[in-house]
Length: 70
Image (cartoon, rainbow, N blue to C red; front, top):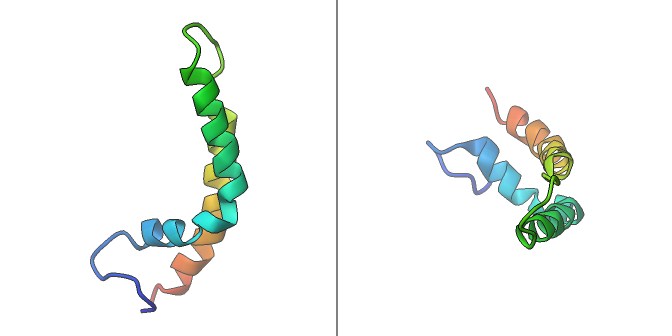
């Protein structure tokens, strides 16, 4: 099964394997989180950055996960 562990969340394992493919989106999210956390009063939430990151992460991971289903 190409290095994936049985009995664990395989989608999560594929997401971890896809981290390199979405590094730029993760960096944008982390920069936003740092910016928000450095302020005591802000309306910024980083919601769109999170959506973009998860979307691209799942775009990479989902086809790999579904390919392993029997």
